[in-house]
Length: 69
Image (cartoon, rainbow, N blue to C red):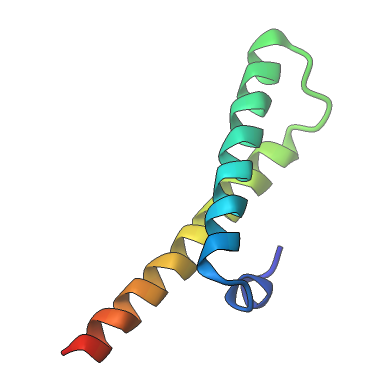
């Protein structure tokens, strides 16, 4: 997932994406603990995607605060 793709999404879609990623991260951690994880790289990818979504959301909040002043 690219940051450019995320920037084209609206806030509701980003929050839905964030919830989905958190759910996937939970499942991946559970699989890792059970020893059933087929792809260890996916855990890192999901964490980075969560960070990207949070960054885009935070940039939008910061931009709104600047416009309000």
